[in-house]
Amino acid sequence: MGLQSKTAVVLLNMGGPNSLFEVRTFLQNMFFDPYILPIKSNFLRKMIASFIVNKRLETAQSNYQKIGGKSPLVAHTFALCEILNAQSDFYFTYAMRYTPPFSQDVVRDLKQKEFQKIILFSLYPHFSYTTTASSMDAFLNALKAENYAPEILRIERYFQEPHYNQAIIHRIQEALKGEDSKGFHLIFSAHSLPQRNIDNGDPYQEEILENIAILESMFGAYDLNFANTKVAYQSKIGPIKWLEPNLQDCLTHYKDKKLLIYPISFTIDNSETDFELSYEYKRVAEQIGIKDYRVAKCLNATQDFAQCILNITKEAIKSNFKAESF
Image (tube, rainbow, N blue to C red; front, side, top):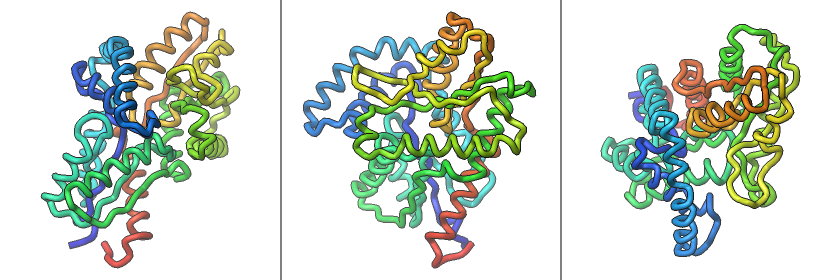
């Protein structure tokens, strides 16, 4: 039996509501996460989280109603695992941080199946304590709770991988629909973080900017020559200082221009892409008078992203599980 057939690969992501009824659960779990709301006292964090949830719940449910009554993230991830399982002997599954399937449920399943090697594959391409570390820690804590100690390999970032960036370029090309890129301005939109997170050592912004520099260096080989490129940040919450520039503020500078948005910090479409970028900001763009406003799709359950994941997984195994061979 080869190593692949003994190895489970768990795709980790934030999750999203599978129905309007699950929106409350999603918000409660997210804001109770100490990586998201860094308050040491569990009691105080729970009180503040409950206040935030009650204040945001009705609006959040309304937003999800506009994109089909649920997040698209889970279905895309399920479909991605289906592609991956059909093309390899690895066992691909997924665990979500704030909605089912939770880490503890996935851990119980893998323990029952007696996997001794597990690869934790972050679906966040750039490392952040708020996302990657939170998901990794939740899974590792679930392993401890189940007294299950397989060999673990973590894949926490891969924004430098050529195949990954090629897949992004393919999504950008698809959004252009054969039109000349010179007529478009390109904004790489990343989910924002509080500035204090970066000041405290979170590498997220640095990795986002490095990823954009890599993509810009590749554009020439794909005959992409945008009018200009820019990075902006979306999804700011609350009055504290967040990363800048804010995407909504940036939109005001593109009146009468063609604008293409690529959601650089996401690999799977979710409410921030399908609602915030493609619905909410599209309406803002129309009011501003942006001539052409487009949002590229995330990588989702595409063949090139699946192949990218397989390539990264195999390379990681060769480098870290050297005692066995395929």
